[in-house]
Image 1 (cartoon, helix red, strand yellow):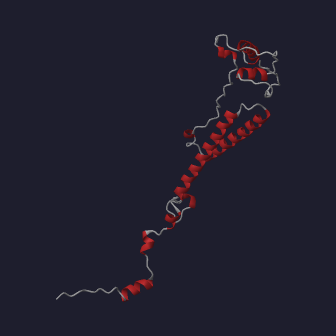
Image 2: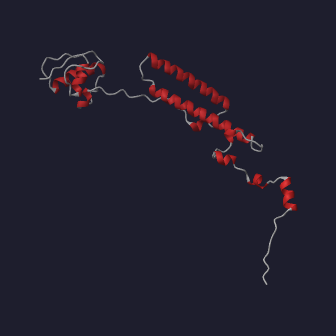
Image 3: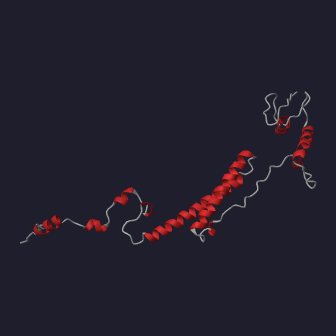
Length: 200
């Protein structure tokens, strides 16, 4: 014979072996059982009465799954920003939109702390939208800098090709061909001697 004990809502049941997850849900919801093992139909009836107060089931659905609480669907946020729409905007518009998104994100974070955690999906969308706006701002700024430094002798380090440390320090063909004046005079006055073998 199994003994079931009741406990507060949200607390774990510490006494009695509970093998059925439905039994665990009903017991943890705060219902008292007699000292005999209830059958599955009794558990379903108790759970049905408990869940209809929280989630009224549809009249159309007569399946057994209607007796159990359904997870609350996450609502999709309307604050998604598409990258294709950002390229035609000016820098001022992008900065303004970025400020609006950041302020909205701050408000949602405050609401998440004060209320339930149902704002997680919208916070995720806002963070990704902020990242998209920042990416477009950065790429447009780099594009303008490349045009500005196009014919200059030196480029900023972040605009130069990455490559590797050894390749970046390697001499160019023009630098390799350069020689000192002293070396040129030595090669002129003391050229390499050429020897020939005379065959009789």
